Image (cartoon, rainbow, N blue to C red; front, side, top):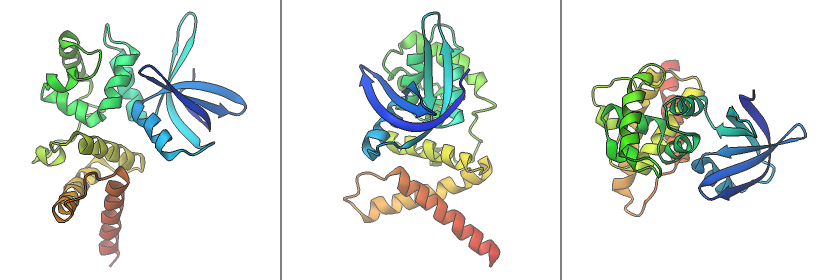
Length: 228
């Protein structure tokens, strides 16, 4: 059973609404279905023979083996939980994770935001209700967002920003920052981005790289204050 892989990118392609990459891992080529967001980032970066690291969900069937790749362990675990729901297949899980961050989905489940869940292609009203019902309890432990006094501070009315914010939280978690440390950073990040929007009317998009830079600068400043 393959659970994690690192190798050199050989090529990538799209088949209908599915996105694939081919990785050379010690002379073997692994065909892996990835999230649309990951696929688009590869296209944008355009780095031949780039080193790829993915968490893998390996699904064995009678006539084939399927590999699904994720940039973080949390995404993989989320995907597995989706597959455990009766009547919901792998493409629904991939579609959900491609369109929304884990935090956005959990927030939608906790607030029973059926409109957001059902906006994913292939998810109808009945499936939306089943997802919300069965995932609400499952995500309370591993994926639960810490309760904060002003939860609305962490989610603004901007889907792209919310998705980047979710990705940022996962990245900081992978760097071994605690949930408490991450949540303490978020208000500062949002405040900084609001300053940019107010002072630069032409700024239409704030990148993930910018958010990460703001987070790292704030961490560095905190460390300097402690050292001083």
